[in-house]
Length: 259
Image 1 (tube, rainbow, N blue to C red):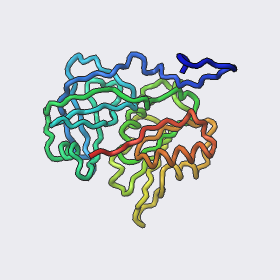
Image 2 (image 1 turned 90 degrees about the horizontal axis):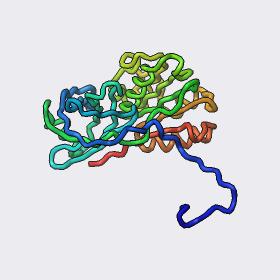
Image 3 (image 1 turned 45 degrees about the vertical axis):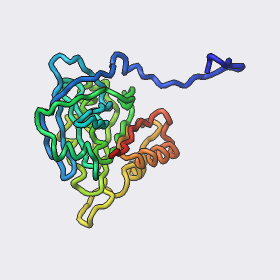
Image 4 (image 1 turned 45 degrees about the horizontal axis):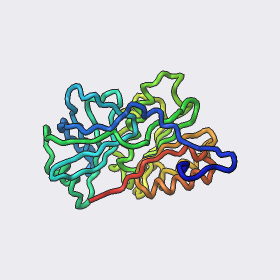
């Protein structure tokens, strides 16, 4: 702390550049439920409609805190294309005995009035020109990555990564509730990964980080964005850094459930 200490030798400061968040300030705003769509047995897509002229903007990868009935408040990643700031798409997984989860799946109705605060978080795309960009997701950790993919698709060709790859993991086929290759107009490779697949499954098995490393990626020119369970994030970070991924090229957002 420079207010009480002073350096006695030369000092190198390692700081992260967050200039992309300049001008992106969290706001507390009302919103209404515009659509509710069940996209998997335990996942619902929620679209929230913002007030006209809300003047709201976000960066792909960020999240919002949504306040529901009875003062319930939960955090959800934004799955929307950042060019559509008049609506917020959420992808909500049902949580056993979850109070807010029960609201979304059992009680929520179109035009319900809610409030949210956001955007929040520092999970967003850094400089990726010329890099191999890999996205690792588990479950609804795909939501902010969908938003990031939309952002990349909107860039001119000379501002895009050298390559884009997505590995999305679940336990069973129904856990992979979207088709990224259809949802986003972007040249990329997509590898679905199942950890509890039946014998009929012919695709990749195991954990996304292990499947990725098995392809012998060029980690010295790779940037990784990971979102999903805390266990996946911790395991992926340890494995990838040990294999040679530069520390400043692993970006993540871990999901932690609350009842």
